[in-house]
Image (cartoon, rainbow, N blue to C red; front, side, top):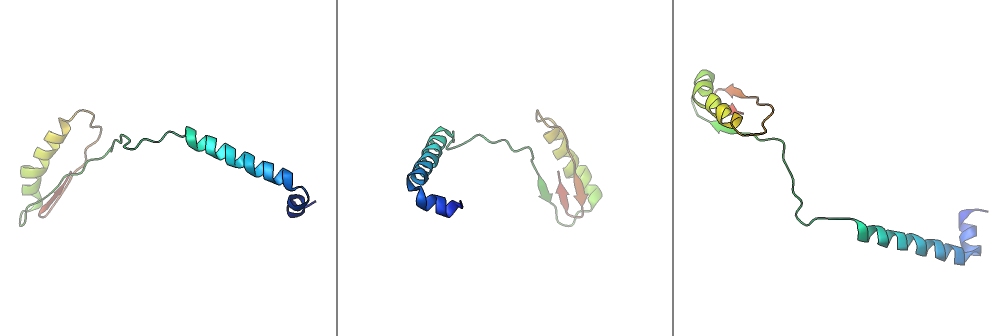
Length: 91
């Protein structure tokens, strides 16, 4: 017997199965815990600075190293990477 013919010939069974699925859905939905404002932790921080006209050596010495030292003082930092390019520093 196929599903459509079973649904037509045994409509009480179909109704009870539908009601059970709806009931389980309502119970499951009511037990799902959802916070309105959940706490999230972002494992990444990025600092970008611009100094127009400066070469990478000046950027590295005067900006990037200072920012790396300051960021390294923050507790919980596991890894720091930086890039100095003409006029730009990324930590």
